[in-house]
Image (cartoon, rainbow, N blue to C red; front, top):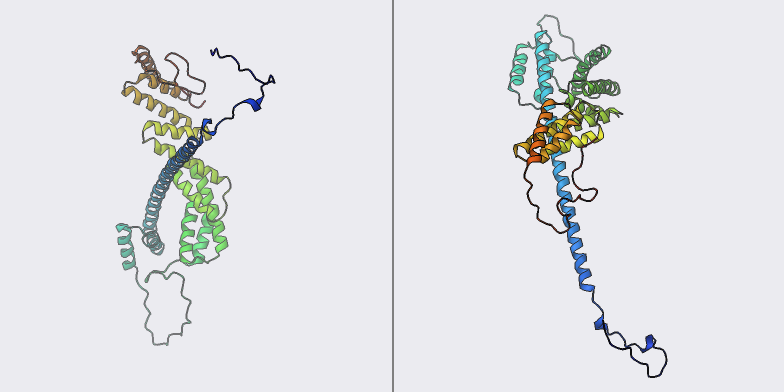
Length: 367
């Protein structure tokens, strides 16, 4: 404490602000350089954050594109196999022309490198006799020139006319044979895209949406991917309503199934995201529980029993599995008997034994 006595005012008047010595400019603290430095650091951190977010987004986008490409390729292969089998059936039943048209669809339209289809198409074309004119003594009538079709048929094959294909598709639609409707109308559109276009698109849209809904809702998940692509084909013709959401949910489900082949924490993250959106869809809750159990097994293998116990507990909230319960008991015992490792004091962290602030620490799985 200072012992300096207050100064006396020689005039005897009270001391006011006018009597105090002026503050020199150099005495004021300078904050200019620190503010500029903080601004520069802030801009750099913002740019870095944006770059990281952008890279993460790009990685997710690329993963999504790769999954869609894989889905499209697998469905294309399934379509090629189906068309080839149908061509064999057509040829065996005597419909060599329709079988040849299916094979042309595989080789030309789909551009498939399928040696079997190419060989069979060559065989069918060679075995089909080319019509020849019969020689007679009477003069042949003069034929009127016919218009050139949009897609010239293969020489030696009498292809079904657009009208015949349309009638066949109508008959299949009446019998609710929607796969045949789609196949026949796709051939019709390849032969003559302009033939009764509005009616063809209406029939094709009905068949596509019906098939897509069937594949997306049936218990077996083997045709989920095909249902998604059929829904997209129907959407390209006309709106599909709530079928679009069904296809979206099915796609998310397939994302989760694909993630199960990855590291368990990635699978957990994917299934947690799906569970938060559609917890009652198919076996989402069971798959999330199994993913939790897989992570518990992974931590147990690494002899990290305390996190293993946590994941086993989360798993048993969603599934009822005696084996997981037994592994939980073992992990809990090992965790309780584990020798705690001294934790060094870190500035800003609570001392060992204290409860961390609310919002920190272990988080439970979805309820």
